[in-house]
Amino acid sequence: MFELLGIPPQALFGQLLLGLINGSFYAILSLGLAVIFGLLNIINFTHGAQYMMGAFIAWMLLNWVGIGYWPALVLAPVIAGVTGVIIERVFLKRLYHLDHLYGLLLTFGLALIIQGLFRNYFGSSGLPYQIPAELRGGQNLGFMFLPNYRGWVVVASLVVCLATWFIIEKTKLGAYLRAATENPTLTQAFGINVPLLITLTYGFGVGLAAFAGVLAAPIYSVNPNMGADLIIVVFAVVVIGGMGSIMGAIVTGFGLGLVEGLTKVFYPEASATVIFIIMAIVLLVKPAGLFGRTA
Amino acid sequence: MAEAVLDKAPAATAAKAMLSVRDLHAWYGESHVLHGISLDVAEGEVITLLGRNGAGKTTTLKSIMGIIGKRRGQVTYQGQETVSLSSRAIARLGIGYVPEERGIFSSLSVEENLMLPPRVREGGLSVDQIYELFPNIKERLTSQGTKLSGGEQQMLAIARILRTGANFLLLDEPTEGLAPVIIEQIGRTIARLKREGFTIILVEQNFRFAQSVADRHYLVEQGRVVDMIPNAELDQNIDKLHAHLGV
Ligand SMILES: Nc1ncnc2c1ncn2[C@@H]1O[C@H](COP(=O)(O)OP(=O)(O)O)[C@@H](O)[C@H]1O
Ligand SMILES: [Mg+2]
Image (cartoon, each protein chain N blue to C red):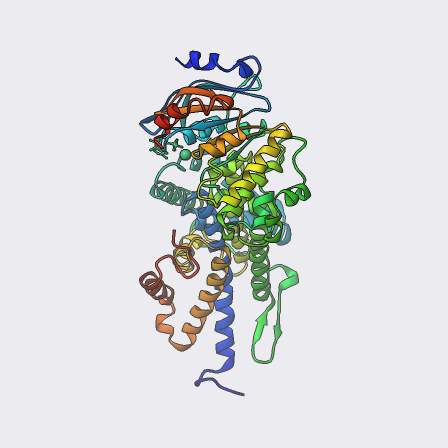
């Protein structure tokens, strides 16, 4: 049995895996924030509440309608995405010509309302959600034990992140999106329906958050506050990565999850703050973020 | 005043005009920039807007295109009133816009820039015809759009509009800041488009260039059309022109 700096490998790899899991959530959520901010110019503070909604919709589908995990993985993001479309059409579209601050205040207020409603109805103690039967158990890798579900979370979020990157960077729809992000007026003057693009983008970003929420449901208990706790860290991730870049959001999300995991092994006292320390350093050295473009 | 100017345009009576602009006003916020522009463009014509910097030429094109927040007056395109339409709807009528700053997207490759504007009508140039017209573009398809030289960006900005089938073009200073050989190439392109039946409003500072391609010239000053000169009479009016353009 080898040891690294006196750390047993099980502990090291166990924490790295935890870090990778957290990083999966950071990546999906900061990706959604980056996509929304790019096109809408709105810092979507509702994102954490929408992640929580994803988990709750999965729970409701299971307990009220009898629809299980796998269909919920698609249905919950779609349902949450539709609520996002409504929010965009009713509220956000009135704010585009105003300062960022208004969007931030509105989405922050919406987050408080949504979380309050769920707390009222479901309480804040948390509801259990079973790991789907196909993903129970785990693999003994020799150097560590890998629970199947955790492996699945990492793979699923990687696939979703890369698929999103592909759509945005490599497809015609993505070209519309990039063009509208860069110069909405001219894009619209070519006959492209930019308002529709904006609505769909917000719905898609919300859907990403809800997808992360469904992935999280079997790991963490389904709880009205689950998003509020996470979103603060995700905003730090976004600041570190920079708002501008899709790949930046993905890489920074996974990377910071790993950094957090490593910190838990080598200096546990700092594990809750390490991301904020990195954020402070990045803000000092490269204010636009690691992957951000200075405007 | 505006009416008197229009009377001198036998080729473009209001009835035959493809585009007719009457008493067009436009604002940037509180600042009133166009004070009643009137002009007509007949099908197949190339007309220019000549005038000093800040006269309102770009704003006129933007107002026709529907990308000025506040505008008032009449813009009639093929019999249809367009002042109340969004720029998206105006583009769909077949009007193609090449902005002064060229508007090449840096987050798109050259090819993506070329393919970006959707087809709005039948009869646009095929990609092969575009490569034949602008061979440089074909060489650079995978480059970032804004990595092209100024001249290549200008050609790309024109090329992507020709793909869409738009047959009414708004070209805002396509020769600005370009080398003489490139200006020549753009001049040949405009002449060819004219032969193929395109209708064009061209904004130009370079009135020698304007003279080489246009049928008529509108002089714009302080947000108004102050004169209209048929191309054949341009040389006789050279003094007037110099006075207006300040050259
Ligand atoms: N975005 C803008 N905001 C405020 N004023 C503007 C803006 N763009 C142009 N102007 C003003 O409008 C007037 C006409 O400008 P423009 O149409 O660009 O002139 P031209 O194209 O003939 O040089 C100028 O006085 C200019 O300063
Ligand atoms: Mg101009």
